[in-house]
Image (cartoon, rainbow, N blue to C red; front, side):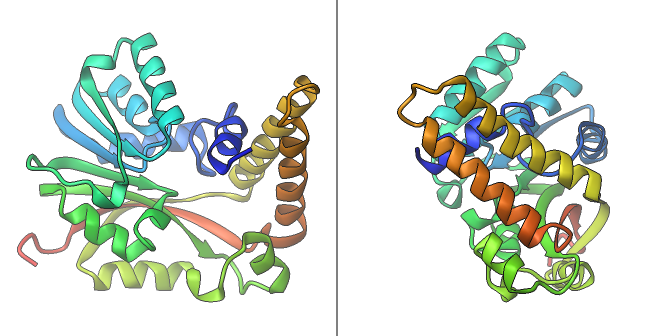
Length: 251
C-alpha cells in the first residue's frame, strides 16, 4: 500500500489533512478571504478540502488546486460536482514546485505540504510568485513545542534542524519580508483528535476489509503511526497556521 493511499484512507473522517478543528478552519478561511470576489490557489491541495470550503463560504471566488496525487484529485472533482462547485475550481495533476501562473491569486495556500518545496521559507518564496499585490498566504507547518528527544525524532523520521520553536519560526518568516496578520496554533486536543482519527480510520478500514490484499499493511501502518505518536512526538511537535502579507509590496 503506497503512502498516498494510506493517507487518503487515514483522512476519511478528518478531510483537512492537518491538526486543525473545523471551527478553526472556518475562522482561518474567513480571515484569509476578506474580499467579496477573488482567486485562491492551493499548492499541494490533496482532496481540495480547503478550496472547497472556501468556495462554499465565498460564492464569488474561484479556485485552483495543484497536487501529484491523481486519485486525491479525482475525489476532489467528485466532491466539487456533488457540491455544485465544479465550474469554479480547476484541479491540476502537477508537481506544486513546478506550477506557474500568468494570472496572480488573492490567496495562496499550503497547509502541511511545505515538504513539496523543501521547507517553510522556500514555500513562501514560491507562493510569492503567484500572489497578487495585497494578497495573502495561508501556510501551515510544524514547530517544536519543546526540545525533541531521540524518540520524537525517530517517530517523525525528522532531523532536529527540520523545525524551530514557534518564536524562531515566526522570526524567520518576518525576516523574509512577511507580516503575520493572523494565526492559529493547534491545541493538544486538536492534535489528539487528528492522530486518533488518522490511525483509527486506517485501522477500521483494515478491520472492514479483512480479505483485501492491503488489509495487513493498513493495520501495520496504523499501529506503527500510533506508536510513533504516543511514544514519540506527542507534545513535542506543534503545528502553526499563519496568515501572511508582504511587509512591503516592492520588497
